[in-house]
Every structure is written in structure tokens, then in C-alpha cells.
Length: 153
Image (cartoon, rainbow, N blue to C red; front, side):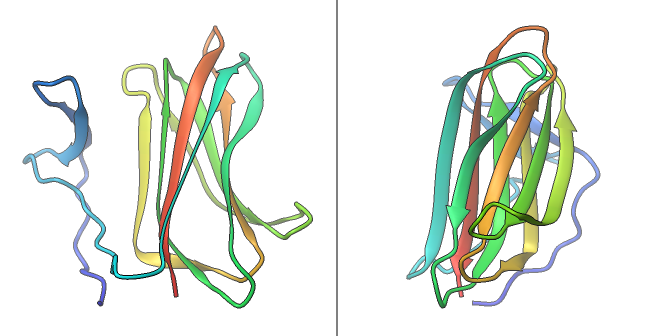
């Protein structure tokens, strides 16, 4: 399956559904999707950290690429119970040594959810680790959640 290439909108927001859930949509209510071949190799790694202290940075989730594999990183989603937060997505080697920072982003208490979508994907080599860290910039501790999605290629 080949990636579908589209121009990303300039306005992205959460749209509340009648049952209390929310989805991320564009200004014209188009739902943002990143198709992947779900027949094999799909990666969906979720993690959570309860009560992240004010001013502290915690690793929320990681994904270790298997030996001989390559991960095509497709998206990272992060949410917090209150916001604001700083999000750092990076790649380390097996010992934890930083190889490169992929994203640094922020979200506010007005919308404490962030979704980073990479339609073309970012290749992460075998035995390396994708790590999602969050710094709590709120005035109180809060719970933080993160999901890494991709495909083994």
C-alpha cells in the first residue's frame, strides 16, 4: 500500500461528539487519517503516567524496534488531564543514548491533546527506541497519556 499524499490543513481542532468522545478534524470537519496496511506489522504502543509533578519530565511510552526490523513511525498522540505540557519525541539507542530528537511540541490547557502525524513516515532502525517524554508545565500534577503508531517494514 502506498501513502496517500495530501496537503495538511492550517487549522486542526478537536470536535466533541454527542457521547463525550472527541475526534481531531480540520476546519471543514474532515477527519485526519493516516492509512497503514493493517494486514501485518502494525504497531500501536500505548503508555500512561499518573500524577506527573509540576515542572518534571517523564517518559510516557517507548517502542523498541526489533532486531532486523525497521519501524516506519506514522504518528504520536499525547494527551493530558489538564495541560499545558511540552512533548519531546526522540530516538535513542538500546543503552538510552540520544540519537536524535524528532519533535518538540507544546499544547495548552485549552486543548490538552496533541497529534503529530507523519504521512510519509519516519524510518527508525533496528534495536533503536522511540521515546515519548512529557514535561508538565501546569501548576498541579496531572495524568499524561501517549500512543506511538507505525508499521514494521
